[in-house]
Image 1: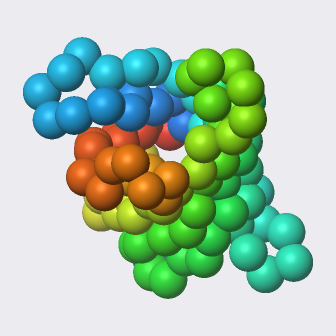
Image 2: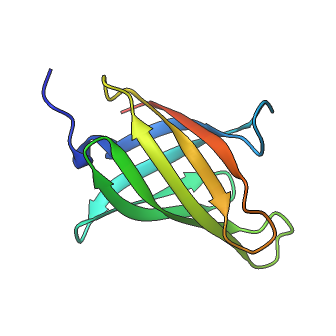
Length: 112
């Protein structure tokens, strides 16, 4: 198996992000590609976008999406880590809006 690199995150993922540890989570898709030396992408639901940098098996950055209220944007940070096979990731996300500094789980499985 070839060594994992930052580009190992590029692809399409089925994901679940949880609002807190132990909830059922919200399923969605995440597509990641390389653009100008950064890894960027988009996810559904909520018309979300991610942008960040990867080193080895770790991808860290920021996310933004339409606010749940439908008015304005929500944003925050994330930190994801690939498993040794490159087929799944796990990590956390958090808000940067001043109302919640807690982190919550975010997991994914590669589609392509």
